Structures are given as structure tokens and as C-alpha cells.
Length: 101
Image (cartoon, rainbow, N blue to C red; front, top):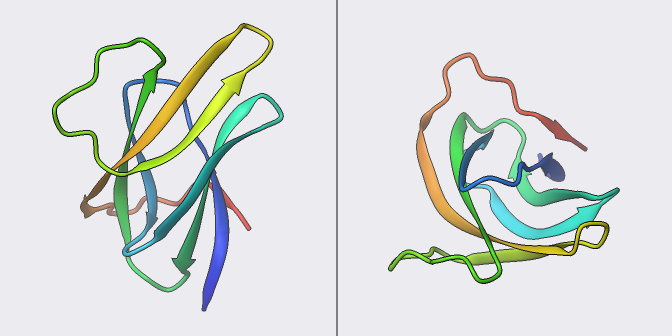
């Protein structure tokens, strides 16, 4: 069954998020002062690591960014973060996704 799930993101250069293979990343937005990624997933698909990169406004960027998926504003501290998808990595053996329906 295809559903939409949300995944909490960290504000750091690179992170791997366990999620079902072939997920469609929909958006990254702020929720309760934290970056959240929403993705359309096939619940029964095998898990892979989805690589997400985060860059602050004014920070250096690599030559290859990957598709843009969203911007989060941290109003309380005046910082802005931009998130990019760097695709899937090998399967996550025994990993459980940190997601909410």
C-alpha cells in the first residue's frame, strides 16, 4: 500500500534516512521548529538508506547537489537550511524506519 510518511531530519551536512526503496520525496518543511521530510512510500518495499544533504544559506556548495527538496527557516535563531536528495544507498539490514504516518 502506498502512503505518505514523515521523517525527522537533522541539521547536518549529510544524513542517511532508512525508508522504503523507491520512495518519492515530496517536501521538506519546518514543523514545531524542526525539519521534516514527507515522502510517498510503498510500505512493503525493502528498506534502503536515503541520503539527504543540508546546506545553510551562504555555505559553499558541491558541484553536484542532487534534486532540491525544500528549505527550512529557523525563525528563533535566524538561520535558513536547504535540503537536497542524493539518492538511495544499499539496503538497511535490520533497520527500522524513523517515520510517522
